[in-house]
Amino acid sequence: MIPVWWLEIAVVVWGLVLLCFEAFAPQFDRRDIALAAIGGLIVILIASFFLAPQPTPLVAGPYWPFYIADPLAIFFKRFALVTTILVLLISMDYAPVVRAGVPGENERAGLGEFFILPLFTCAGLMWMASAIDFVMIFVSLELVTISFYVLVSFTRRNPATLEAGVKYLVLSALSTGFLVYGITWIFGVTGETHLAGMSSWMAIHSEDRIPLLFGVALVLVALGFKIAAVPFQIWVPDVYQGAPTPVTAFLSVGSKAAGFVVLVRVLTPFLGLPQIGKLLVIVTGLTLIYGNFAALPQSNLKRLLAYSSIAHAGYLLIGVVTVSGSAVAYYLVGYLLMTLLSFFVLVVVGNDGGSDQIEDYAGLAKRSPFLAFALLMGMISLAGVPFTAGFLGKFFIFDAAIRQHQTGLIIIGVITVGCGFYYYLKVVRAMYWLEPAKAEPITVSALSRLTMSLLMAAIVVLGVYPQPILNALGH
Image 1 (tube, rainbow, N blue to C red):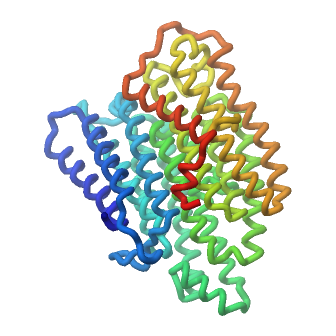
Image 2 (image 1 turned 90 degrees about the horizontal axis):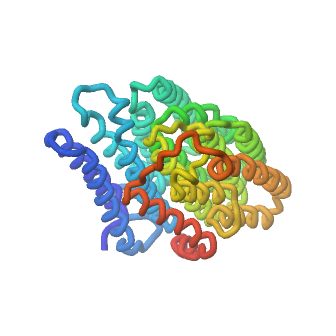
Image 3 (image 1 turned 120 degrees about the vertical axis):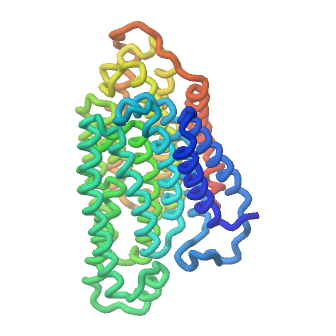
């Protein structure tokens, strides 16, 4: 039995070990670093099922009282580990593109760091899952964000990547300013940075709360940037399109999941304020409408998935508005599976000389039936076709909205789901109904084929049997 907080320490230590090894042992294939990182994360993931029982919600460790080890936190630590493992698997196929995009005489330059940095991002995501104090929320959030600064602009020979990196840096720094300023206002009013302390303060004080609302609004602006909610989504399309494809996948899934965990934690003391609830409903509706309708005309698949990410943030916000943590968690698991499966196909097709344009996927079913079927599974699950994890995720979200009588959000949600069928299935149309520009088959490595097969199986299994996820959350 091990303490919960050892998990993050193990990830950081393993990352430092690999970083030192990569620096001082130059004569080896850098993709072995990725395999070592994946192996270490798998061991840590297995260890997460042998945690010491917690007598209280708070861990009596060095992070107390900043660190909580409830079922939600442990679930999202495992979520971060699985996400990072899958991103590293995608990155291994993306290695030739990374090498071509990094200046240097050494043919291995940059690859090691590209495989190691996600470990530190993973540690930050795991700390965010347990953070219940604004100080730790800020520190863990910055660990994640600084890692992404480097990863987004990693292939710096590509002008689109440099543009994406600059946009992400500037707008992320701006959101950090909003976060710090909001925390300052909240601390000035309540004298607390601990979320539980804020709940206690609000139970006692009922006087004028305008300064407190202002601080909470500033914090929500910062978190809105992290989860790509409207009107703070302006960075998403350009950054997703310009960043290396595995990094786009990591941003889309890992960063979004951690942002929602923090949002749920931060909103807990303030959900009793009616102004906050109304603000969230408005933001949710705008996010659903903008994300889905902006995705309709897209011809670039990465850009389409970027607007799709905004749309899925809207569905997840319905779960936040209705205070349904289990629905949000299940939806994020389904989103992890179908999004990473889609990005896996993007990387393999890109390595064969294709681009991210949907027209380059014309006739993919003839060139590689396996890749076409994998992308088909990803698209129909994202759209919400029955018997997939995407359908069941939307079902839980809408069920929570019906129970809370959120009629307006239900209507908007149903309409926008229809939009999703259009823009996801036009990718399927290109693969199965259009003729390919070239006839050469696309080869898929055994490891990639196995990983994509497991992702497809998980999408179907969790689409008909969600109980393993619900059990992990304690439901």
